Length: 400
Image (cartoon, rainbow, N blue to C red; front, side, top):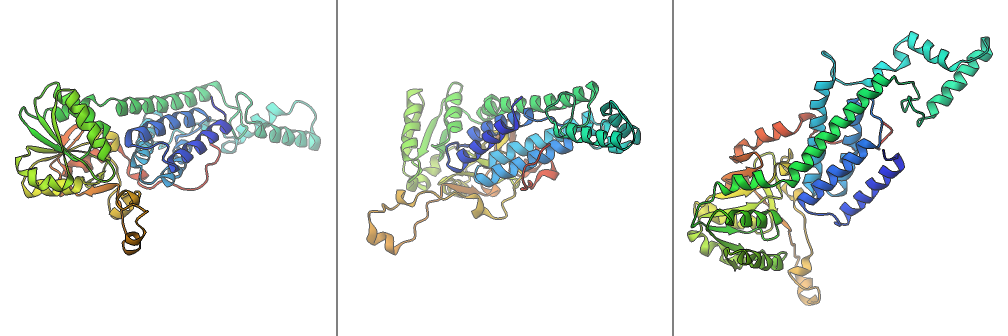
């Protein structure tokens, strides 16, 4: 079990890495968040699911505030909170909403319990000196959090109660480990996507920066014979687009690279547009790399189907009331070099790294659970998240 000092150091390090973009990408951030949660839960003695949920909500708020554009960080936190609530229903007695192990040991809930605690601490003397001795011992024990058999409040815990606490913590950790396995395993996602591709398809993908897209196309090429058109995604992903085309060619997949301006010209011949979503929002829309929205609008004009690929951990309960707050802006020098001072003085250049794609432009959202209409995404959201965790707390983390 890690000490509180160790876990606080790890949390501070992770916050710094998020802020400095040393950890980035939907899958990488999701895995790092899940692993941090395992260490966080392992570092404390939990006496109730209420305390656990409260502390995880506070931690989640800190992580989301550190990097609000990495939506999978908040997704993982909220998925774990949903799992804890489900576990609570299994652990809690009938009619009780919370697995509150402290009820079994809190002396304030029973005068008999208070007497038993005082008697166990009072070894000699009587009268005022005895009472003072008892109070001194009580204070001493309450301040000694590391003593075996005591809660962080200093009250004695029976072996049965401690066993329940261990079972609760282990059950939550097992659920987080299952979530990690789900994030790492893309096979169900790829299988569902491959079923929607046929031989001789001409696919267009405007997502060269997505590793998920590259892996999906390589996996699909083993079972289907198709051709891929990759847009260069200027100015942020030109080199990644060239690398993607080369990877596909090395795997025997017919592929070609086109400029973004040619998307409308080639769309008439395209069979399907395949995009990789960075996040799928509650309304069925998604966040994807810059240039995807233009390709989806062109596909809509030519009535070409648009397939959005995203693992279940990318499904987000966030509704896009403020789209601009979800779009990260990158380095403007990739559009106009800062050395061109005369032009820089006359222009205001914005380089968005991502686009918002409305659900009307997407035909099918492919997740680990299979394909679904964007109108059905809300149902998947309800299955994975609790309505109580839409907004995370932002107060300081306290002792559990």
